[in-house]
Length: 233
Ligand SMILES: *Cc1c(COP(=O)(O)O)cnc(C)c1O
Image 1 (cartoon, rainbow, N blue to C red):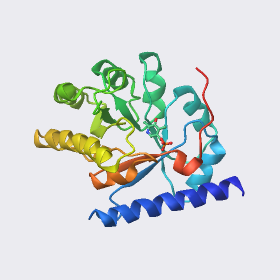
Image 2 (image 1 turned 120 degrees about the vertical axis):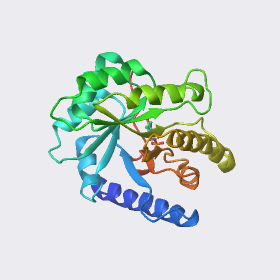
Image 3 (image 1 turned 30 degrees about the vertical axis):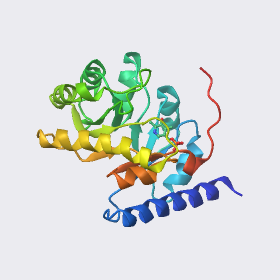
Image 4 (image 1 turned 180 degrees about the vertical axis):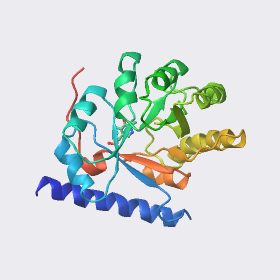
């Protein structure tokens, strides 16, 4: 089958999956946004998805993403969702509208300082290490309130919510428990006065459990674009 057509069909299936689970869990129709994770896939694939009305795209590798954007003229909403090193913050602050993977103040401050003055504030989510895995990215839950406070004080960033990538769990209830932890942290920050609207959790394999626990944004790559080629380095 034609590649663009295949992407359109898969997108349709993912949207139906989201709608089904919104209904099943009493979520308002349309309350869960879809981020199409296009990392490792070419501009033509992004254009095929955009042709169906898909607006938000997620990327994890800075150079690859910036090169891809250069080949796309549409005004799309680009989310950076990968690990971010300080030598790449300027490119991210310049080319993206969102960064979901902030887990250190140092990186947030650089993005704030490097956000171009004519661009709107950069929308950001804090990435939380909800599963407590030692090698994993994300701020430990105990340090989240202090980081949120500090990031909320940066004028060129706008703190929108939280993101997590819990440890892989085959079991639906275990998936739900990990997402429930992130939702509890999200509610606790809102109770402290942070005006948050984005709970970014759930990927191809576990988006149902994330929707059940209140996700407002699910990040889907494989489910739309198919298996990713293995990456070097
Ligand atoms: C790659 C990636 C995704 C998409 O994962 P799939 O399993 O392909 O849906 C979602 N979130 C983050 C942070 C990613 O890096």
